[in-house]
Figure: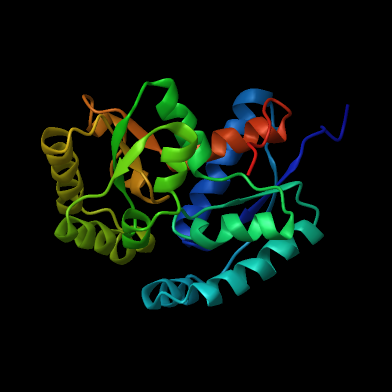
Length: 244
């Protein structure tokens, strides 16, 4: 029966372009694993200039980000998206409440990861991401309230270095061995000193630098892949959007 019935996934992209490309690849790969043949996901991407996003994040200009995301979200829905996902943990600070205000069906990035951590009995985990993600409350509170998981931020100097590597390297599609060593050392310290039972890769480019094979003794929760797998399941009628 053609066309194959599936929901259209609206992708708020551009933050960064590297993450957006990976989302498109992972969504289609996940759909093809389920469907086989030549079938992939139905997607609609609305990209932003990452230079604008970076400047607003650095300046803490969340109203400007909210206004831009509102325009993009409205465009996705007008274009036929059945639900929306945002490729940035950082931008969920404004994207998630905005979607609720606008009445837009929205797949929050923290929920697939929270469910995966809950299934593994996690209670205390390390959180890597941009500085606003690690120091803010928009994902940490959701993990605690909905999934019973405490997400722990690294030390201030570690936060600064993790953030620098994301913006200056990973968002520019650069993967440096020294930076990988830095991330692994911080994760090991947090497991040893802070009692962290796992690690959230809470920025959608981090998995390009480190992932589970690099930390065989520490469960790693990759927000990018978990988000994409959940979106495809919903698009193909195998799952439901969690309540806001």
